[in-house]
Image (cartoon, rainbow, N blue to C red; front, side, top):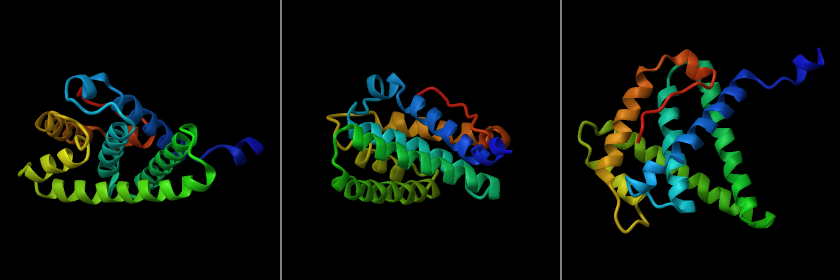
Length: 175
């Protein structure tokens, strides 16, 4: 009985697994070596955020179970950001302020990605967004290549059955 009481909710387990998949995908060397994403804290934040947004987009309007998994994914992402700040030596008094800024940045990205997706098939807004976010600090980057990846990834996620995603199993296309 105690085991059942303290067992994590399935949505939380799925959210944590999905975030692990996000981290693994966002760390793919091709993003940095081939597509020119900056291998910096900010560059990694942008790629992690991009992949979380792609999954949240896939889970959107798919019912209450998907909403629970999406929330668990977001919660895991936020906790990972908090943990990363603390590991980087940010003091307890500053973590809250920095988390607020990161949260605002993430919500801004979500809105911008949604607007860019709604503008498709015109890729101009998505290309501009990628230039302002992922490649903001890069001397040069392959915005069209990353946009092509995002479009392939969205289609790939849309083609995946929902049930495995709801248990935390997702597959990604290569960057």
